[in-house]
Length: 205
Image 1 (tube, rainbow, N blue to C red):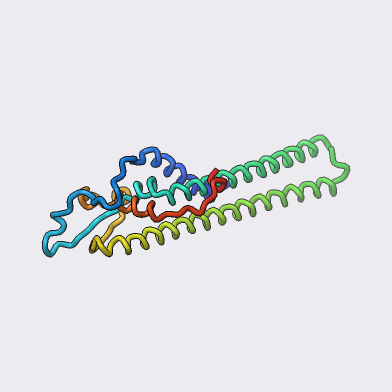
Image 2 (cartoon, helix red, strand yellow):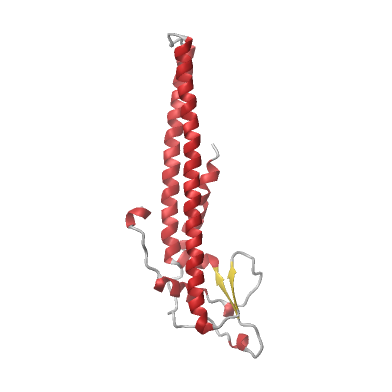
């Protein structure tokens, strides 16, 4: 069974869970500035900042909440498919044993049972595809909501900060950057201040 197709969201949940443990509790206040940017403010120089994506994912409460929701949905899907697969395996094993023991009264009866098992297998494949699509749609919904939330905040944030460019730093897509251009904590604080969760606790457990 191609479980990697619709359980790949679990990789995101696992990574996010690992990152959460490193969350920095000593966050500066929203009105505090990142490290000194005096050199970036030199006359005629482009004003640039960047946001650490990993830190954003681990400290923005929206990301934490949605990670738990996706993890729960992924676990539920996996458990459902595992149970259905075991039922199919049991039915197939029973059928095979009955055939070997001449347990069917006729070939027609055996063919009928075999057809039922094949339908059960087709139903399992359809369920796998449906659950995979649902998880893909939920993940896409999360990604879009995260982008919208971040972009809306940055538009307001930059009305006073006046950066010419704000970059996202993920992995090594920015090979080297001075920490004085890092506005991650400022952005995280601002996002969390605006965030109003719509999730129920039951959605995340």
